[in-house]
Image (cartoon, rainbow, N blue to C red):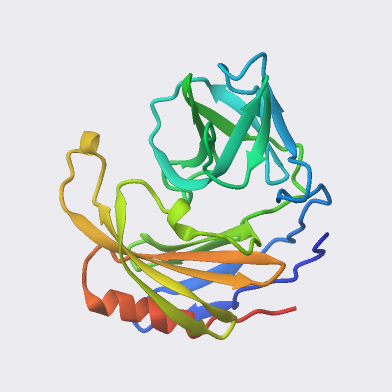
Length: 252
C-alpha cells in the first residue's frame, strides 16, 4: 500500500498561553510498496554482513538507508524503534522481541539527530542516514519550543500496526507510572506518564521528571507518538499537554 502526498498534517500553528507554540512542517509521507512484515508475508531483508557476529554495513530501516559509521559507539541508546533478526548474516526487520532478536534505538534524543543504534554481540553499532532515499519520510518535523528555546515536544510516526505496543518503544531510563485513554480531534489513543531520569549516570545529574506520551493511531496509515515535558513533575504540565492535544487537526 502506498500513501501518497501530504496526507496528514497536524495543525498549522497552535498557540499556548504560556508563550510557546507548536509549529509543524510536514513533508510528504509515503510508505514503501515492499511487503509489510507480518505472519503472512515474507520478512524484508534490510541489511547484510559476513555473519551475525558483525553488524551490516548498511541498514534499510523503514524505507530509509543508513550507513554504519561506528561498530561499537559510546553513544547512549535513546528511544526503542523496533526489532531485527539475523540469519546467516542476513538481517530482517522483526515483528517482536522474540528469541535472538536485536533492538534498534535512536542515538540518544531522537529530536537531536536521525541516527540509529543497533545493539548486538559486537556492541552498539551506530548508523547515520544517507541521502539515497530522500523520497521517503517516516517522521514529521515538529517541536514545541518555549520562550528560552527549549524543545518541549517531539512528534514521531510509526507505520500502522494493529499490535503496536508503546511499552516496547519507550525510552531507556524511564518507567511508566500511568496509562489512560484519551480522545483527541484526530482520534482516540493512550496517554502515558513516564518517570524519567534527569540524566545518565555519566552526566552526574540526579532526580527524575515526568514525560508524557500520547499514542494516537490512524487506522491503516500511521501511528503518531507525541512527546511532551516541562522537565518537572507538576500536574499543570500534564494539563498543558492535554490542552494541546485537544487542538490537533488532520488536513488533507
